Image (tube, rainbow, N blue to C red; front, side, top):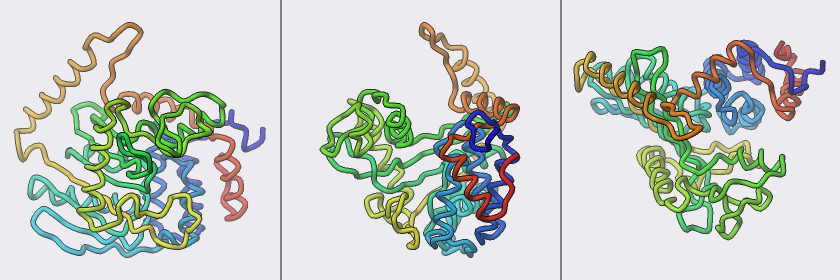
Length: 354
């Protein structure tokens, strides 16, 4: 069976190994290889494939071109109580954001909360990879980022915000936290590309043509709509929250100032910002009361009456089910990603995932 056969399912451990080895072979330091691979594998493991291992070829292009520093020196610029600002030295966004969240957790363990602004970072993949880092250690984690313009405003006719993700993770007494990881656009652009390739019409009110008019024709899409359809001002407002925290609070570029993710310039750093926050629940209420409240909330949520043929789920429940299945059975790469991996394998002499 050829390596690029989409029916071939590859173990998560092999995909992670391949990613680390390829990134290292490109000249990046071990910290970058480990952080970038870990973040991508969070996406792949939990079914967020648009921000999973398929990003590896893009990241290699950014590392080799110079957009992303292969051996950064992340430094603290200033600290004021429970607040810090880090300069990521144009590091891969995953390394910068894991570093920032570890700083935020350390601050929260002392002050009850820790807030860290990140300057000079880059694309970091799935936002949930970093909020969950806090929740796994007993803290509430929040993550904000902006990205290059691709989403119109409500009633707007031009690109303004990026997909501007927001993620919140809350620790529970269960094996997994409560996890929200969302873009503030109606859909990710990868969904448009999928519908375009399949020749299927898009759902209503998720994308627009070059004049800002809604279109269901994927071939005519020039920009995404904000979350909320007729109430898209809510999605645009949430995008603004991410914009203020990640760009204004860091002094970095606003969405419409960021160079496009897809190039063609892969030599110039994008000068992006991000923001993370860790909160220690025990600083506000005793832990037993907090755990009991979260547990009761989730029990009532999951047992609330669904509509016909519906299923009520808490944020994160779908991801945990996908992760269980993929841990057992592995992941099938789409043909384009499999072909790109074969090229990386030959180029760097790294064994293709077995």
